[in-house]
Image 1 (cartoon, protein in one colour):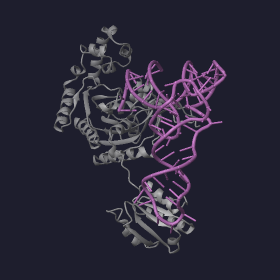
Image 2 (cartoon, rainbow, N blue to C red):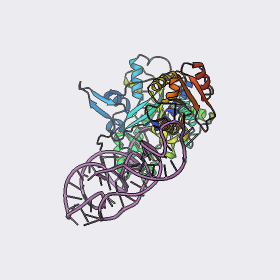
Image 3 (tube, chains in turn yellow, purple):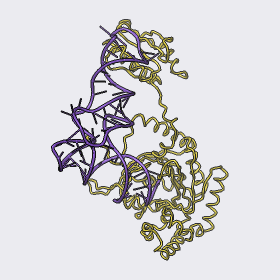
Image 4 (cartoon, chains in turn blue, red):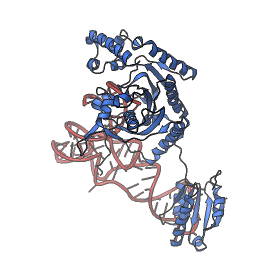
Length: 426
RNA sequence: GCGGGCGUCGCCAAGUGGUUAAGGCAGCGGCUUGUGGCGCCGCUAUUCGGGGGUUCGAAUCCCCUCGCUCGCCCCA
């Protein structure tokens, strides 16, 4: 019947689902505003090079998951696979990279060409927060605590916060060298996937789900042993503060995360209720990214929350929608005209109105009004229309409350509206 | 990119080679042309994701394809 479909891994968000999205989003915005984080909006398409340089060419995201195409001017363009690189680019372009501390958030679609599964789509949505311009561990703590609080505010239970420190570039390089050496000497014992990654992206081997390799790794050099005293102190301070904030966390020395730009703090918040795509929030520090993309040397830290995964976690209490306040029933030419006028008038108040446009019989319109769970109805039939009046009635259980009001009697209408909206103010 | 499961009306489904493809919800119409919620009655898939094939005959078997789903990889 209909052979045109949405693309694989993309989804239509229909009105009923969006009630939940909108409710959740408004809490997110509220929380961000309260922490004086400012919104930023960047294009969803960028020069391919931005992501290649920013995220790292050897990463999975860049090497096999990007939606890349040539535009009509033969420029290589890419649908953003994540938000951080774009935000950093925007800051540089707008001359803000040498300014003071900035706290920014963005929300919108991201694109990664992957096989869809539970909690993973090709077009998905992220809320991202970036704190740019401070290398203070206080900034890390503030950001992690914000992520944690947001998820708490949404009433999500059973979350695990895992953290690790990757040290600075030097620490990491020292470790990587020693780790590669160890990997090479144990090469034959590694699983095939891990063998492939030895040259390409060795740190990722730490994350492997292959249990034999995991077992083997118990004897491998550990990243934390290669951190400088300075890096260790920094990490310790963060942990102390999290303790002080009573934010429970688990140290995971194997948490490295897939994007090249992370330094020092890396963290992830996971939920057991998400199946195999358990991460609802991931983030970390990226002190070298801004310089790498062409800005001033400026430290930063950020996180992203996957909104689809978030929606899977928040309970049904976010699905509550506001009912219609007034359903306008009308029959006859004159009545229709009056209905239009009323519906326009009601828009000025904080009132949700629906005007019946079916032209069917009054009883039919009443049935419809009943079905859409309106709080009240207005009836304008031929009788009312002749007198330039309308009947307004509370619709919940009985016919107790009913009033006839003149079309031009705004005071009468306003007074009546207090019945449906208690805290109503004109 | 690799592997497993699945695909019958808007939704939930019965049907596993043989005359007209159950049923429920929703929708529409009526009983009841200006007053609703209940009830009752009626209507709604020439077609089983799409395309080919096997067969006298296919939603049911085979192949291809698309999509969904779960896992791997990876991440949000």
